[in-house]
Image (cartoon, rainbow, N blue to C red; front, side, top):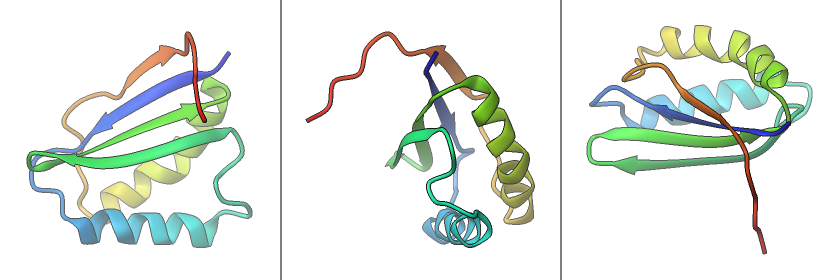
Length: 94
């Protein structure tokens, strides 16, 4: 079952923080995007970053989170709350 996950950063996250975390993730993964990640969309809304991702399974998201969360902490990235996670009902792409 595919899932969608939505993260919102705490206010004030800088472009440089996002870019550096992404750079380190890309360098540390044997394949990029990581196994199970179908889509990653990052955007800014007001003074916070938002990230939406589609994952093939909750287990693959959890495995990736074990690598992601320490990097976020290392670079001072705080989330505005727990990520929203929901089962995907439908995907339409071109």
